[in-house]
Length: 595
Ligand code: ATP
Image 1 (cartoon, rainbow, N blue to C red):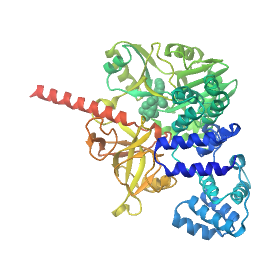
Image 2 (image 1 turned 90 degrees about the vertical axis):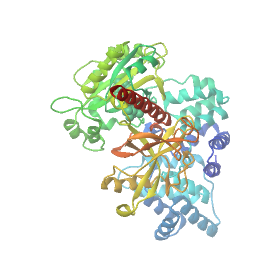
Image 3 (image 1 turned 120 degrees about the vertical axis):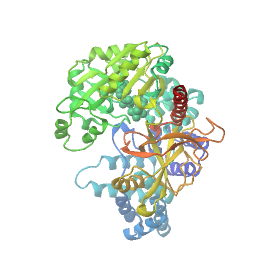
Image 4 (image 1 turned 90 degrees about the horizontal axis):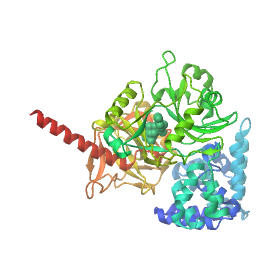
């Protein structure tokens, strides 16, 4: 397949901001793709060469890309750099220099998708001494065979600047329409994706075997399952009500979620974002190897930092010491961890994701050889709100964040990839006004004044609206940033800069600078108010009004383990607003009673 077909499709996709149009264009592209390379087209369209959990990443520094462009176009690097300064877009600069070269040579070969994918894979696998030179030559080779338009997208992909705005969910829609027998089969395709986390694999099976083939996709060790997430409520009564009068309440430990995969003595650990993090936790690998009485298993748990001396639980931040490539063994002793397991998703040939909670939990408890450092999460099954409240207070007193209350009835399957009402989190801070933190996505910024000239003065932040798959503005935040943050944030955001508002962003406010929604920060505010300008929860409480977070402040926590889609949702903000209203009316009535 000619890479030009992909480049033409990208050009059209980039020009639209309408999701439906984007799906149609993607459907066209998939239909024009030979079946045997559908995976490669899917990965490339997402700016990847394989699913994230493989850990083989596309990407080189801009400097190296410039060198390759210089070699392919015959122009000197300085000239390219000057042009890039002006254009601000390595894709456009590449287009210009490759056009000029072609005009002067009249020579060009055709470039195939296979060739692009193979070369990117070779580049990703090249390490060690001499790697930089090899990568540069490989890229220069591709650019020499490319048309200006192809070169533009090649270079954007390899420098991680593709940004077509195609979300996983958009690809699933396109697959259902193009090969899956129509949109009504989308849930089947989505389930396959949720248990395999591999869009390429799902696409290949839809194309080759149709929807019946997709139904056969099974849970497999070393293919991470997309995590189940919790809704939130703010009282024991509400929680029991929602869970049909009975729940299994578990401590909500404040650590890092891991999904452990075991096949014999081979172990892999995946993060909440399903990236491989085995290297960070050699001790956890050892726990799984020695304390799990099953040959094969997929388990989930929370890794929590503990005090070296006392064994007490420590807050999440302490785990940051483990986020390193080298010297983990040293830090392992200095910053030990415990593992609290809460899910058994697969054990010795049996897929447990469709079993109900009590069965999964029993299986889990049966295979753990407990000790000080490896245990199942602490739990209480109860029908009684008072008892639940006491357990909640005990959980807080013992250093956890609160509870995750889980359904126990026949509906209580593991809902991979979904935030639903089968799990409900209960944290102390929901009980009063907005003491709870939110995780918001940076979508834009405004230039700073005074002390902040040259830096960003305020950031425009958004919640995620799951129904429309968009990011809705909810606040402008300029407080809580240290001098270090002010230096660091523009660096983090640089690679997400875009020329205009992102197609998945909904905002009536005009930011000075726009970003693709990627970076998530933890923000706390004083309260949630109705807003005539923000689009979060627009019309949900009152016509033409959205919701805004008042007096927002950055807590200092960069939520690097979260994707933009994992940010606080607009629905959660609506709920927080409603519970705040309830709280105010309770306060008013008790005040009146006092008077
Ligand atoms: P938060 O920011 O509150 O941690 P989140 O968006 O990361 O939320 P939630 O769905 O709100 O995820 O809460 C579930 C998270 O709580 C899980 O991802 C897991 O990391 C953590 N957790 C701690 N203890 C448990 C438990 N017993 N059962 C399930 N999840 C638990």
